[in-house]
Length: 125
Image (cartoon, rainbow, N blue to C red; front, side, top):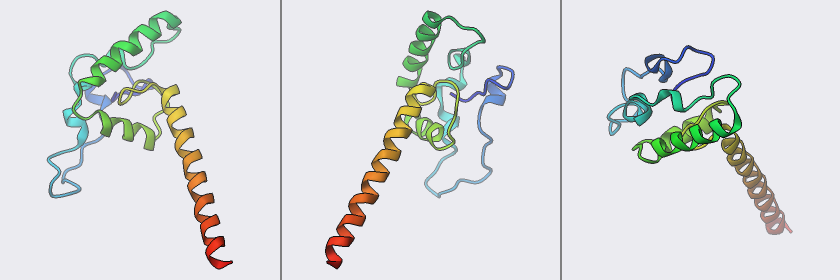
């Protein structure tokens, strides 16, 4: 979702700034211009203060249903993982789910580096 809990809940202020020129020739525009969350479900994606757990879980599931029908869900998810976005539902993942994904990616990168180092050591020996 394209909103920060540190800003008033306004969809217009919630989107990343748009580039004036495409990064690539085949790019029609920034990914977030096609985001379903830009329309009318902005309140689903971020928790109000002191939200009860049951309400949070219900809201997050509703937000994930919006994400599931979004044509730029993957781009949104990657944006949230690369930033990293600490709050809200982005690309169908909650902040906690994104932390798990990032931890798995870091572990995988460490494993790949170790495997590459072991392979280099074997070739030298």
